[in-house]
Length: 132
Length: 389
Image 1 (cartoon, chains in turn red, blue):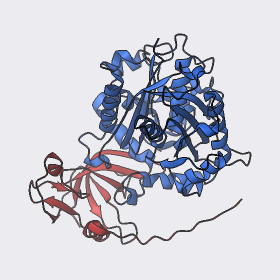
Image 2 (cartoon, helix red, strand yellow; image 1 turned 90 degrees about the vertical axis):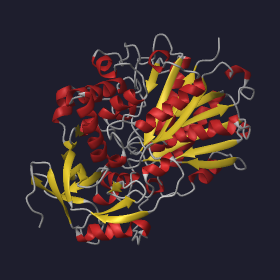
Image 3 (cartoon, chains in turn orange, yellow; image 1 turned 30 degrees about the vertical axis):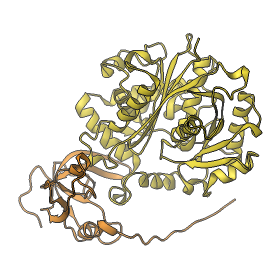
Image 4 (cartoon, chains in turn yellow, green; image 1 turned 180 degrees about the vertical axis):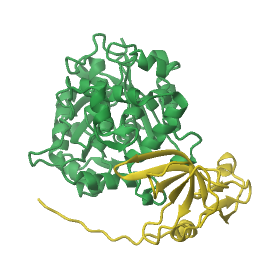
């Protein structure tokens, strides 16, 4: 039998709200643990220092430069994707590569708009002089 | 100790005969019931494994299958852990028996991953198997995430495209002797290299297929199995573990740390102190060719896994045969059924009743089944052993 299901989601962003809003505008908003200073982009809800003990931690948001270094990348049917480290972040981020044909490891964050905000980078070559 | 009193599974493939998942699940269940030599009235509980309601268009599938199986009145539940769903269900069944809640449990896994939806739709849905709120929003596919993990693995271990392709060839070769397999292919390393690039390093032939199918086990407390089945294979250990859901949050995106945790727990329960010498057979989760090597590493199956792999140590004639069923790449991957099918292979190999071309001459005494969901995020390992002599 034939059947079609169409779904239109309105997802509550919760604690990820500032991060997702930043992505839509092209701003790398990272989460910072005020206890150990670990900076994560994309943000961790609970810092790794919390997994070692149960002492309380508080968090704030920190704006990164938006520059990133590509560590690993893959290209294929779905486009290009990378594991990259944003300057100032202690973790890596899975990123969509906006210009997959470009060589190099230096990249910058690009704005994605409000629909499906996600970490998207543009590769600029081996080094970045300025960010527009 | 829990006995595996009966096993059943359908062919894994893309159904073109108009049948549905309820047919496949019933077929597998009935086969397992007959093998266990018990009646449906002897079943206390049903655990159903299925990854996604999106695939089946059936929420609460355990209730439907309990009715279809003629098990109305039994305790029934669904177990889900992405690609690990089948073995998560096995573990749930073992827990029911070990805790005394049930004496005989049917564990049935199914998935209509191939024929119900387009491959494009299924691939998009799989993209939400990871952190849908961050990584998933980028449109990254399962293949691309596995590829990134494989790149990290290759950089650390020196594995090559050719190593991965050799696994893709070997598992399809085994599938040629498995009449239930989805992809029995006689292919070469060049065929793998020349097939379309999905997400480098993975070409189409490095990927497991989307399959339809079902598999089932009847688990039993040792005192509750029919006398004729008390020398059957048993589950000596179960272990589960998890890793950070996002690759970028892991210390090494190429190492399956959650799998290592799961294996350690399963080995401890089974009394295995040296997995690199005490295990005779392994069915591991080869969603992609490179993932098989990553699994062998994390499961601790060799002291020098790259060297032993390249010298043939994990082939049918080697020290520790891996994925003789063809694995996910050869036998196929109807997700909820996958982990249970691995168990079927282990049990039948131990009992000496596996497909003739693949049955080990000396049946294994100890076999393990390994699955995971996500990129080795939710991990489950099960140890099977022969009956005590």
